[in-house]
Length: 152
Image 1 (tube, rainbow, N blue to C red):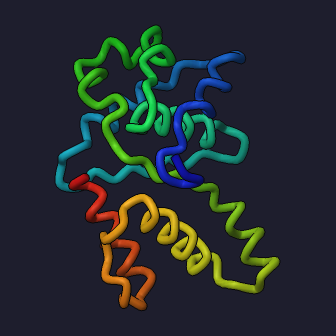
Image 2: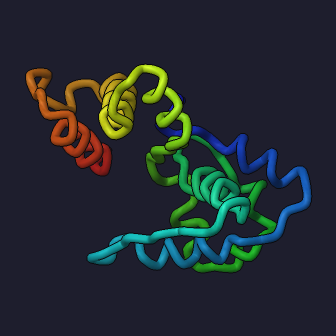
């Protein structure tokens, strides 16, 4: 779809073409958290320990803009009761913070502000009318659009 919204499953498909260690237990864990009062997960690992691989896996599994059944049907998650229930059912926002840091350094802008502006621009294109066009507070506007996305 866009750069940040619903990036599809190409990233995970590329990973699966090479040597892949099944880490889809993370998906089953997250599926169990969906709908709970505090569904927050912090996936912190040292450098070069698979955070991007995990992010691509999660995007491919949840992204509603694609069909990822063939990528997951032979993995551990396929044994879970939540496999079909949650697969490709959600809007996904994905972005690489390091890219924003580089742009912010070049432009002399604030990283957080750069992230908010870029995400808000794409989300408003995908979900027109989700916010009041007069809203000047980027954080509030971004929160409004993301809140509205849950209902679409």
